[in-house]
Amino acid sequence: MTHPLRIGVLAIQGAVSEHERALRAVGADPVRVRDERGLDLLDGLVVPGGETTTLRRVAGDSGLIDALRARRRDGLPILGTCAGMIALADEIADGDTPLIGGLDISVRRNGYGRQVASCEAQIACDGLGTGPVEAVFIRAPVVERVGEGVTIHARYGDTPVAVSDGPLMAVAFHPELTADLRFHQWLADQAREYAARSDVHTKEGLGVGA
Ligand code: GLN
Image 1 (cartoon, rainbow, N blue to C red):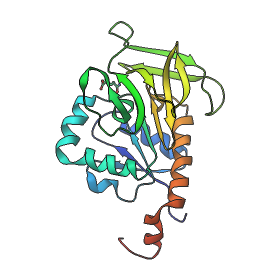
Image 2 (image 1 turned 90 degrees about the horizontal axis):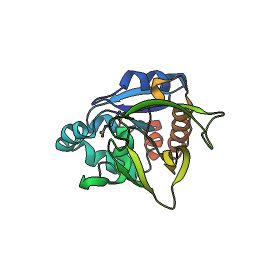
Image 3 (image 1 turned 60 degrees about the horizontal axis):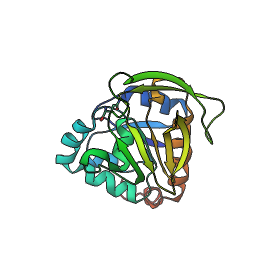
């Protein structure tokens, strides 16, 4: 791979600059994505937290959701945090239609209820980094069902809060608000593999589509 690792951050809402800081810290070059064209030439993508209702309204009308879905089907590595987890879920309880989808999980928005809506906890994390992870929850979704092919990396009580399947990782908390880089590091590693396989970069090397 000859170019810097380009990782998009969906910049419709949420902690965009915090994700950019974390991506720089793992050696990637963050790119703000606001429309379909911003998805070109990406090696990976972060879907930050925020409100899925806003994401649905803003991105749904513009065709960005369809474009995101197409890139996801093409194997683009994606890290979704909080509302980003909801965006990656194949099923949203209470009848909302899926957004980007791709992860065989069912989530319930704001499922912890108002009283425990926001909290911090040290939780064990498997297969990523070392030691417990500091998890900051802000009106987090609850994962109610996890499909067979999905790996659970962390739980809060009995509830899965970090899950992955291939190039998709969904986290119910906000790693970008702490100094813990393991999830961004995971994305950078996936993105590097994706870039090495990707035809786009071969074309770019030949000067096509620049
Ligand atoms: N409560 C938000 C939703 O349901 C998610 C909260 C967050 O991303 N911090 O869309």
